[in-house]
Amino acid sequence: MPVRVNLELRAGDAPKTVHRRDVIIVIDVLRCTSTIITALTNGAQAVIPAETLKEAREIRKMNPTYLLAGERRGLKPRGFDLGNSPLEFTREKVEGRHIILTTTSGTRALKRSEGARWVLVGALLNARSAAHEALRLAKDERLNITLLTSGRKGEFSLEDFICAGAIAEELKRMNGTKFSDAATAANLTYLTAKDELLNTVQGGEHAQYLTAIGLKGDVEFCCQLNQYEAVPICRNGIIELHEP
Image 1 (cartoon, one colour):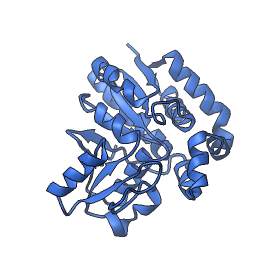
Image 2 (cartoon, one colour):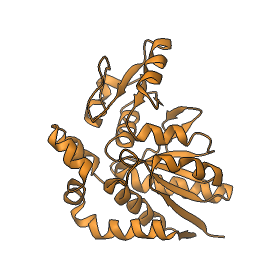
Image 3 (cartoon, one colour):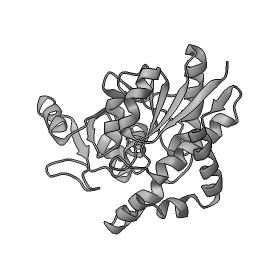
Image 4 (tube, one colour):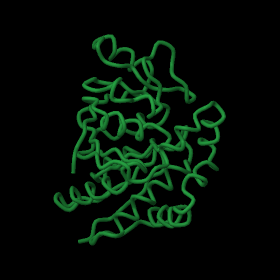
């Protein structure tokens, strides 16, 4: 039977995806999943997602050598080592380190997906690789796939929807998938936007906000398509690098 590709639009939709036992690809283009992919590609040993600032600080208290990273309203919280800009996570800063990461939406989606057997980290940066790995796992274990967009403060996110469509496009090129209507809609949106990907994303509310607070470079970086082959996997509350 073909692998069904589903789409859920908010972090709060994660529990029903876990209940379906799907292979989940968590997407938060601006910027959580882009940052995780970049950090691990640059040699970080692991990323530990935390849903709240309190939880992140408690993990740090128990592990004082871990880097504390994240954002609220796009900015680095008081006392944190790093924010949530992928450009900060250079090899010089993160190689060999564990990173505790808390963000407004992305880490919430990751935490709420923890009951699933397979939780992959996806973004525009690794869309092709994430699609290939998700389909391999789904076929091997006779599961379906859900593209879980984190959204923005519980609402629809343009850039995440486009990214889901980019991953769907890669899945469409492989044999053995069928799409939900929502996944089809995301794919059609991506096909409309793909030749002006950066400009389209820059028209979204969150990209405009990040640009207004001086983070235009993050938006530009996160809109690069298929720059990395790495597919991070979240298991038992820890995200580590997985090379397909």
